[in-house]
Length: 307
Image (cartoon, rainbow, N blue to C red; front, side, top):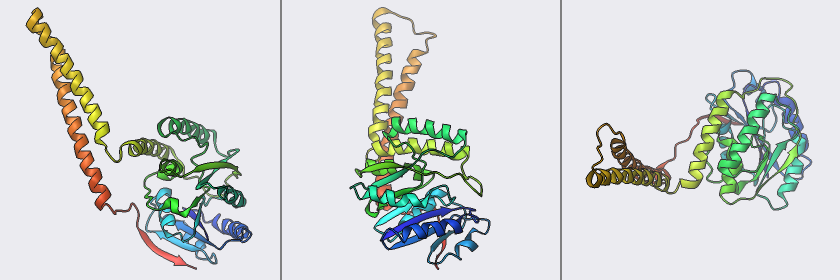
């Protein structure tokens, strides 16, 4: 079975046509399928239009929690062995799904769409270009288009994956870090015909902070004390070295320390190093507790409807 996950937020004019195109494509691929729409707290007639779609499953949030939470809810509800994700604004072309599935059959775990050419504003393309460079530096991500929601996954890749904030952009990076094989192919990107884009600068800022968190999480999630401890040890040794230098200068060479700030800086660096090291130990304890007891979600579902 193929499960298609589509988050929607105020897309009342697009979902009917999208569902029609999608079902037409899915009927030709030779697999059973399900289509899951996640209504992310729409304030227009999106939910009303969704209830008209035959055979569609609808997950409706109590309010707008964001695209990442919508994907997370859809992934956890999906019953298929293969999961397809895509946007609900008609810019992703359902006709690309068979090619993505064909690439998946070559032995990959994840196949991502690469919108080529992009039908977006120059500002969005510039931000995406900058984000791509940062992803390559921090995460080692070589994908051209992490912002493209059109992807196919083998379901087992998504087990144990919990998403929050703007993390849906980094799903391929997360899965690649877990050892799954990830690739991409070029896909059609259609211009938005109706509705309004949900992208803004605040999402770009959140995406950057999430990238930094993901960098830390991938490298130090098991033992954060390795990062904080190393930083604390460096500061302590630096302060200790400065202190020894001025101690020797004062005792053996009679150098006056009056009016000098470096002896005070030495004490400050050593105390900061000790604090950072202790912070690493506390973070290590917190991470262990998180892994053992955390079950909290970042969203709440009002209802699940099967037409």
